[in-house]
Length: 275
Image 1 (cartoon, one colour):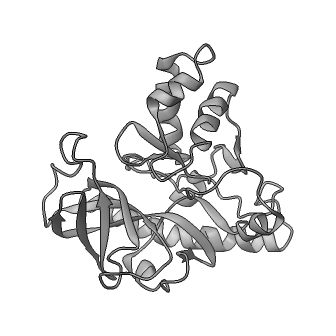
Image 2 (tube, helix red, strand yellow):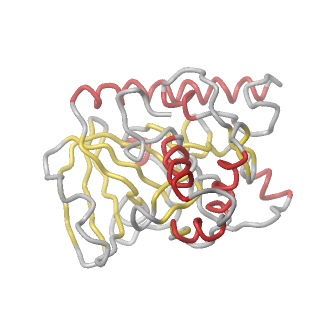
């Protein structure tokens, strides 16, 4: 996942995409085998080099969510969205973040232009309406970082690319890097530079290594359809009599920290990253 100096939701290892649910066809299963299940640290240049009709890729593997670190050059606030311009040593891009005007203070109210920040984004294939990188790069999280964390991010970008390429090579050669499955098999810790610790791995609609209660919470979130995901109260309701609310909150925090779920419109809406 993230290194010990980073904060997940506040941060995260790496993630996966919102989408449709149900029984996938053989074609769709095969198509998703090379998709990374977590949030991958990347440089701005990697995002800018992605063709508009193609998903973001690192070392040949599709990446749904990525983390960038750079200087926040501009903040342009609108009624329902905020546009951010982020620059690192490799380039400059613009990302959008949708906001809920009734949800309270803006999520970036403590940030200012010129600050070093960490940004978690999703790169959506498709033409950009407002110039390169303006509408197909969606920001899901933004926080200030230190110069030391910026340096760590640069190292993690290189580590992630090498790790993905290494695991892909082992997988192609019949190695055990993918846990016996057909995908990349990369865990959050492996890509984020946290080492080879035992962390849960995503396999289809479930996660190997979760406790029964953790799996129930994850499944309730995973079943959500739509970009907003599921509200915390809906998860409470679906697990009434099965998992206490305080435990649900703890499990949600754990799943978020491990990069298996993420917040969408506010802190109470969640979406599974393996969709």
